[in-house]
Each structure stands twice: as C-alpha cells, then as structure tokens.
Image 1 (cartoon, helix red, strand yellow):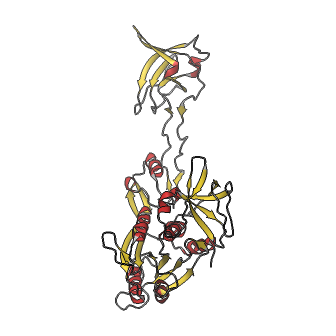
Image 2 (tube, one colour):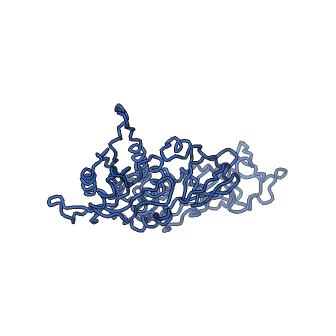
Image 3 (cartoon, helix red, strand yellow):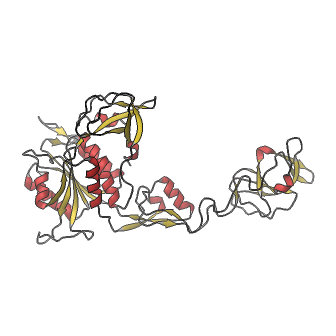
Length: 422
C-alpha cells in the first residue's frame, strides 16, 4: 500500500489541466479559477487622497502648532470625495473628507479632532492644535498597486477579496477555467433514497448528498447517475457512458475485494487502475485510474473529449466518513490541480492534543477533533468510519503518523475543515 504522501503525489502528477476557459463578468466569477494572470492598468489609489476627515494644509503653515498655541488658517474650500479642489494657497486650509483628492499645494491632513472651526463675519476659519509632518494622513498615488503590476496570478481561486481587488483596478470581466465536468455514481443494492421506505438490510444513501455537496462547493458541473445495480456489466456500462463527456468519474463503494465489489474489475476492463489501497485509516480502499473513451458509433477505443482519450477515475470507499476524508485529502486537491491551481495540498497546523490516543496503528490515522476554548483539541469519542455524526461535531482532523500514540499535551498536526470545505 502507498503512504498518504505517495498516493497524493501520484494522483497530482497525473493531472492534466483543462485547456478551455470562459470569460465572465467579475460579479459572477466568485469561486472560479483564474485562467490567466491579471495586471492593473492604473495606479491604486489613482491620486493622492485623504485617509481622514479633517483639513488639508501646508505643513509649514502649522509648524509649532499646539493646544496652547494653535495655528489659525482661513478655510478656503471644501473638498468631498469624488471632487477636485483648487490649488491650496499659503495660509489657507481645505475642509476635506476621507478619500477626497489632495489639492495641489497641500502636503498634510490634520484630522478634524485636532481642529476647531470658527464661523466669522469674513468666512470660516480653523484653528489647528497639531503640527503635522509632510505626508501625514495622505494615501499616496499607487501605494497599493502600481500600473502594469500583476495583481492576480493564473490558478488563483477567486474569493470575495480577489473580486474586490479586480474591481478596484476596473476589471469588468475575468477569464476563468471552465467548470470541471464530473460524473458520479453509487454502487450497492442496499442503498435507498431518503423518502423511500427502508427494506430489511437497506440503508439511506448519505454519500450521494455528501459528495454532491462537496463537488458543488468546488464549482463542478455534475452529472449524477444515481445508484447503479451491483453487477459487473451495469458498472461497466455506466463507466463507459460517463467517460464520454466528463473529465472525472467519481464512484462511492464497490472498490474493496468482495464478490459484490465490481468497481475495480469494471475499471480494469474499461481502462486501467494506477493506484488501489492507501495506508490510511479511515479510507484504505481508494482507487485511482482512467476510463477509456470510445467512439459513439462503433464502440471502439479512440473517442476524445477536450482532446483527451480517457476520463480520470477516483473510486472512494463506501463508508461515509472514509468517503468524506478521502475526498478532502485527495479528490479536492486533484480537482483544483486539473483547473490549474498550484498549491493544493491540505495544510496542517501545530496544536495541542487534549486527549489520549494510546493505541498506535500501522496506518496513517485521521482523527476527528474539535478545537476547545482552552486552545487545544478534543477528540470525538467514536472514530468509526461509518459514524457520520463525527464529521458534523468536529471542525478538523488530526493527521496522526503510522505507529504514533498521542498523550494529552502532545503537539499534533491539525487540518481544519475551514481550509477544505470551499
């Protein structure tokens, strides 16, 4: 069996990035993968502007100003944001608001809390009780972004902050990788759908809802073939149909070695398996390979989609926790890599275990845990691979190496779900 690191490296090394992209309005690009790097066509901010509501002044006019000896300046103009003021003359101040353009001649802003306005017969005057230095409370042109600089790299997954950055330089549209086309199906004659009456020996198909939700979070275009009968021919037929128009096929269940586990021989008949079984718990029976595409008319090999002669295949375990964890650790990184994202490996953080795990396993274990108010990690009491309540209670996983016990107070590797569930 491969280690977790070996398996992930094998899967990611096989990834072939899709070569098609869409151009979307920036407002509609949330969650998509940027296809090409984007540069700014302007400086941000585009002009020197005020960081504060206050008064734009010449610093020399307020030299030595203090509460006991304030500087007194004529208020010559008022400059709201979005308006352009007149050049500031010596001995005068401009009432200015946050974001407003600094007028020529001014080199500092004094916040309004350090000023007092006086309305007099000959107009408004301000007394300034602070001696500003040149540049005080001024945002300089281009201090955030310089024209021509790259603001977003290709392969960036666009979040709200990236969209805001793109909009700040006037990008009305963005090129994004097309949605990955993913086919899913589920094997097992024991599976039923919620709303149906459970027959003796049947269970509800929770994995269908689990995996579809995870794929939707990644923005995939999903074709759901539902529950496929437990037979080799039905499994082969579904694989062949799914391969025709999809980049990736994901199955749940049927990848073990029982007489009713038909996914492994079906994939080997319709393509090839490059990996099967990983030294991890839960999630050992994870399969990776390819399913060949066939010409629609003849059924012979040679059909292509997106220039590729095969669809990728990932077979997940049937136990729901195993399916959930293997998706987060392997399927999610693979999907992101197919769309051009470079940094896809799950990240772990050092945290304190507030529990004991006295029995080491020869496999890499992934324990469901939750952060507590004391800054440590609590362990869900039942770590069984079918206990789906553990995935709702917990907020991450402890990546526990093979042969490793854990004592309360030990430092462990914590992988938060918050990094993986979007």
